[in-house]
Image (cartoon, rainbow, N blue to C red; front, top):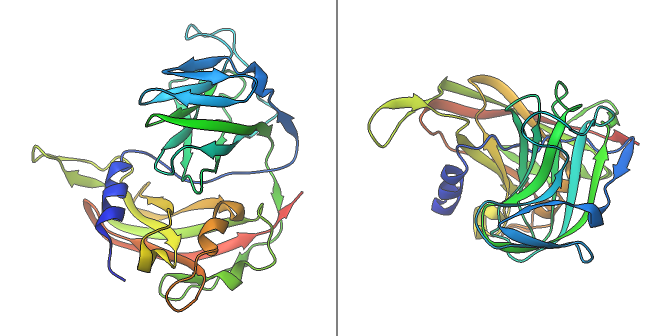
Length: 290
């Protein structure tokens, strides 16, 4: 089960991004009118077909409520997150981000998700201290591509049932462990990193790692065929940490079978910088209460 150069390159490319897949889903909802999207740059948006043509790198599409001077802004106090369902992306190599900017802080809430078979779902948690002053939110693409948006929803957090511990065998979680759970069930991965959050730069100086990528949650088949995009594991700090995903965001990986016709997820890590030890502590799942 050796590490693959392609996966290593991908992790290095996104090393500077604090990418996770934490999300809540359900409860109070507000469906955004796709015909009213009013923010685009380096691209063209068709309000009738909800088709966005990204013509350049780091182009964007979304909703703007004010300006950088502080007012006016949108009040999203009644909601906890934004969910964007993308029905069509012209290439699976596209990198899409869902970003939220506020008038009261320079902090930007940002999340990304892999594109699979031309589809993806983006979630971003609203900053609880600043969500009453939303300047804009938008889907940004790292590369030129075409995208069709299916829905954009503001929603509150979901309540969950008691967590269930998932069985892990040498980093492998059998697909049967997820049987009977809905797509809205929350899967939590807990892991440990030991060492220092520094690395040697190209100039030879020791610098902070800045949320360096240290691994990936992938399909068990990815160990054989390297054909399934996975969820990035990001080093946030030294010590114990975790990240969460809705089960629906992992289904596409569970549909793959490896050489022994087994289905499941695999935790694959590598140590970058001065990190000396990275290992999974456990994983749990909680069913959503809608």
